[in-house]
Image (cartoon, rainbow, N blue to C red; front, side):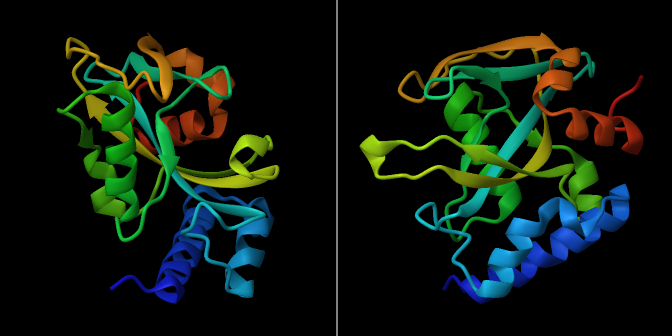
Length: 192
């Protein structure tokens, strides 16, 4: 059975370990920490002002390219991801979202995550209101993982959610998620 309080404690532990590992101030995640202390159901997509999402930074076996999706509602190239669904663990949530949005079946979580128990990045960012879904402007607290895939795998994106999926040079992450890219370089997951 899913325990929202245990989930909040686990996310708080991830935040604390992430801050130490990457030398980040705890103020980076002030809203998420505030929601945890308040006992908000951060696992639910219906919790505002914010809730947990997960995403996958998909890197090819050469470490030179990243697989991005063109997000239908935001109109931007982004890493695959979406809302956390209890009772998944966070890593499986990121893998599920990546598989759903790209159609790839041979995705693998980078072993670094299992060795460290840490995501590569945690980012809180605003999401525009969607009146058609009764969603006010809110925050996604995105927990990000590095996922490996073969570049020659056949892409079959879910066109109900994304416009397309395509490989891009790794440098595209500088504009999308610069902190995650820097963290991948700092940990040695990517070579300069």
